[in-house]
Image 1 (cartoon, rainbow, N blue to C red):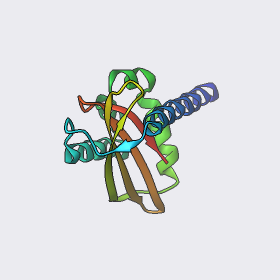
Image 2: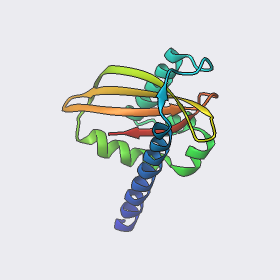
Image 3: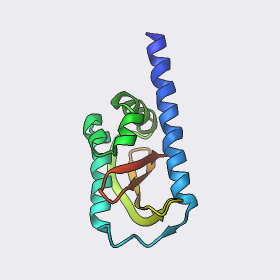
Image 4: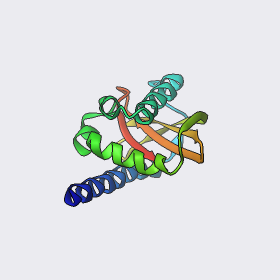
Length: 144
């Protein structure tokens, strides 16, 4: 049993690093106004939908919003571990406090929309950074 828990923790840490690296790659290319290919309100709503799934423990539903590459890199179990670790310290979800959307381009010129959502929990806030490709599939997801 301990081996399984250690494995899940390692997978969670690995996924967190993958997500952080994805975000750094996008952020390193500079934030701008979002492309006309994106609807800012839809980006915010879809990011909040993903967060709602996590808060409700609906990890498979959250995975369904991700692009294929992210789905291959993370499991529902790893999402659960990451969410329980992060949100477990903050208590129950209360409200969305703020949200903003910026545009990003990667080194190849592909455009992304990045939503930064601050969610209030009983004992503090969690900031979720969620990036989307033009097909509105999540390509990055980070929480702190």
